[in-house]
Amino acid sequence: MIDFESSFIGVPLPNKYEGDFLNLLTEIRQISPLAKLVDCNTPHITLYYLGKQNEKTLLGEIRNVVESNIDVIRGKEIHVGGSGMFIEDTSSRVLYLGVNPMEPLQEFVNKVSIELNRFYPRRNNLTFIPHMTVAELDQTDQKPFQIAHKKIENRLDGVNWKFSIPGVMIYGHNFVLKDLIPYDFKFNDNNI
Image 1 (cartoon, helix red, strand yellow):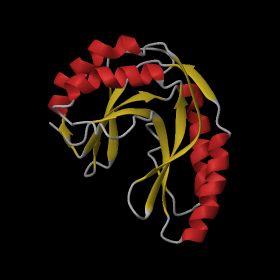
Image 2 (cartoon, helix red, strand yellow):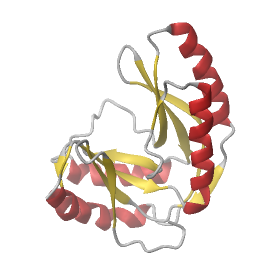
Image 3 (cartoon, helix red, strand yellow):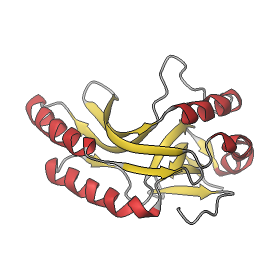
Image 4 (tube, one colour):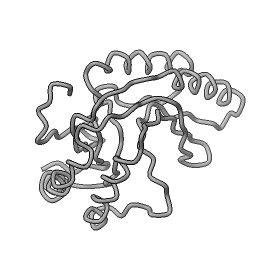
């Protein structure tokens, strides 16, 4: 059984956009060589963060909660594009692609939150923002940060990916294994 330092529920990016995603990360690296890029092997839209979990819990109770609520978002059309930024701490900024419409994703998150709060309480004071993280930038040195941020923001604003939600995956990250491990379940759709 694997223990994960970080785990979450997400919508995988369909195969047809994986090349575009890799190109986007390459461009971000060229703009800001010091940017910490996301794992290019598991592009996804984050729906619900689960924190530290073990494999048994992820594939047992949490999986059951997700499966019982999946019809809320299955097949819904979404659009990925535009830029956003989360402030992680005083020196770190997480840049992401936005996702619209938010309503079906919000409904799914609200439903699973009721049952998943016992595993990892959602911070109710924070607004849910469906997003696709692309990079983390250090803003300690303000001028290089502002230049890189503006260039990356302009590039993210040019993204325009539309697709129907093909399913959901549970992801677990183990820092010892150095991998983000996706657990696919119940969705054998050709779009993934």
